[in-house]
Image (cartoon, rainbow, N blue to C red; front, side, top):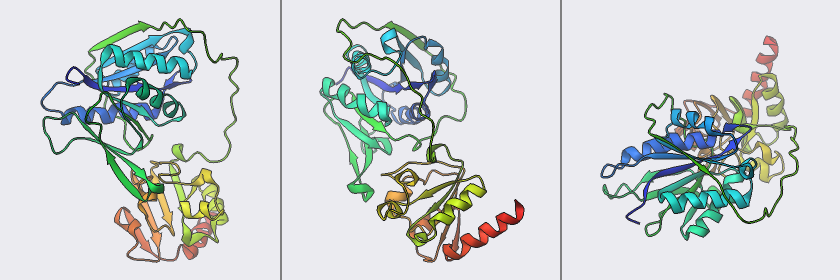
Length: 334
């Protein structure tokens, strides 16, 4: 454990672009290494693919001190077999102290396999990370994740094995706002595997986007139990103002809203410019999935509702009455 070093981030690539969740982890890792005072840790990005070395510039700009690139035709498309092999090779060669991976479909598939090979722990679906605040000479991560349907948060540590591994939900951290200009090293490696392909990539069929995309929304008009009879109007109003409709878990559980609308720890973690919470009490399961929004507007009949504690603007009112008025005003402008 004493010979491990640095915080590594797997940089997931799709359509020749590093995904936002990975870039957000680079930004957060910069904050983590600043908390480590007693040793000199770097942030290291890991890129897997074919003809992707040029993407290293993006990684350096977004917070990486060093980037390791594995190039191979067998890495051109995601493969559980080959991505697990390559990431485990990083563990063997570079001995990272921590290895962070975005909790995407790909991340959730390969991270536990790498952890199992490395005989180390993995904290899945985390929402907060910090360096041990009780020991100034520690590099141990305190990783927090929701449990019991988001009603409880647990902080997990991996004190005895390395690397410390975690998958982290996209949109809970921010990318660096300024260009990072401390590029140190680019390492290019060829990927070799003597085993036959367990799965052969034949064809990519692009799926047409349907429904809502909460993760990309700039404005979200979200409803909770207080608007259980008005959710259709929420959708209609959101469409009229070019916003995206959202809902709390309560409406999904009641079969009023589809799962794709759910905001929160068991739904989608969002970070829009404006989040309007109507009839939402503010349970931690919900707020932990939207509290990074730039502007939060809350409407609730209960002046003591928890949602007001994180709102930038709050209105004690019946959202059922406010929504039709909002819609009427909008119709005058259209």
